[in-house]
Image (cartoon, rainbow, N blue to C red; front, side, top):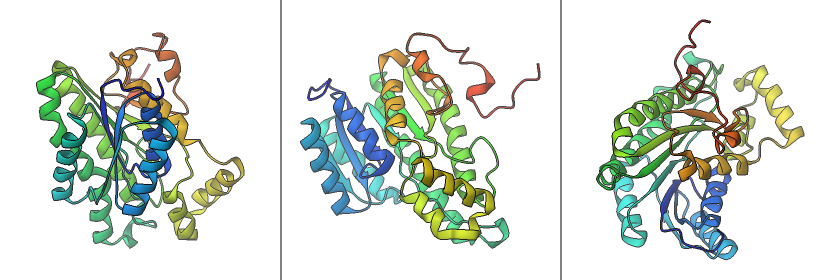
Length: 279
């Protein structure tokens, strides 16, 4: 309930704007104590004030780059010191990375894309998992994106990093299931964010199909970030206790029906990166 404290602590990276801020707001409204991390100090401060003012919630903001290993460890330390053990980790921070034909993409840009979209998420998982295992509770939610479930032309670095993150999600879910820790990946849909602006600036380098998609996105306004936020609050709740190791689309999957147990078998290939078994 809004304005209450349910005792849990959520850490959300990339939490100062876009999808991350929507997720932080949804958790704060649910009574969860929230910590957000982002690179820009002024944006972090503004987000903290907005969340506190709207929800009367306990919110902590930490500015820094999660792609730097030293900061990741310091971030987790500060959150634990200020709020207590981390119950929910949302790996939302991401960058679009280089855009264009594969042969034109610089190696340094590939490495930067993997550092933010994959390695930072894995490092934060490594930092929170031991405590979650000891406490035999915890939820990790990783943001997937375009290209993780199918080829995305001219976005090879981004798509490859996000695909790897989904596979890491599936493996972590298997390893942590005996300890009561759940790990899932979320595809948020076509949300207009600052990353979308990077694609717009790329112009023709993004390819004709993507340019057409952007034009449609401008007309429709895109998927509201609150949809992915609602999905994540559900996946962090007791109502989703049996759901782990899955890749769920905020737009296309009937996850609201899962609240009442109305869902296809979660062992089905549909919710994973595996090839679908021929029928």
